Picture (cartoon, rainbow, N blue to C red):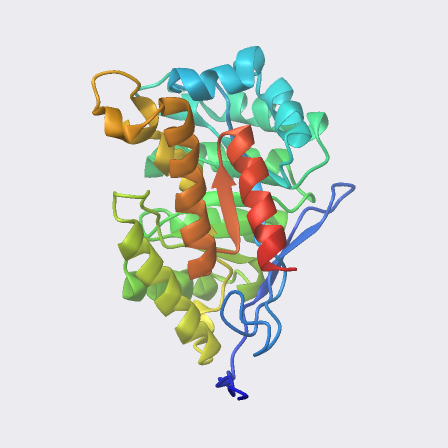
Length: 312
């Protein structure tokens, strides 16, 4: 008996956003004309890209994650090279030291760090500010100038600071990461505001926020899936590729950080933490994430194998 598979006919398509250039490797993100994995309906676009997170100063990582990178965490250029060797397609540099409560470094330090990382590797680069709007504006402007012509992605570009972030992306030819808090209407509204400033739709990545497994993952999944459905139904303000952060979100949670004082049913922490990161990333990819930011090298290897199988 032949079972006929129902085929949806979509009218919309996810934008393609290119990172890199100016002598740096180029990578295209997005481009799907159907939901993830449904190749029988249409093109699934470019495979989900995998970025590895690094910081501009030594982060407060749990022991397992800290030992995976060794002393590389003390130098962002060394860390970027090691991340490239671990399979990163993109480097995600967080300017953690710029946070007012974690060093409060400024534009000069951000500019030097970005230049060091750009010189160390030829991969596309994402630069994330510390998440404080005023400091984000300051350090992202410096990062933008340092990387002019190399088409990096800058964020977070939020409702509080989108004008500055959008303006530097336009002037220096970069990509804006529009970040909103787990709400479809807020995500669409921010995309519209960034576009109104003059950023082309092909230069916007959408970050609708991420929750780790057990910490709102199902809600993040639903938001991403609904954004994808709206995009495929030709809502242009939902057609930007989606970036998610399963690695950082996972390693903030006690299930990934704690080895002692937990029920034996939780299993060995070395296995539990990696599985937590892999499952969070896998769910977000199946929901429709076009770019995932990961932390542990073994989780990166596992999730790249998963992506290869999904696109085989």
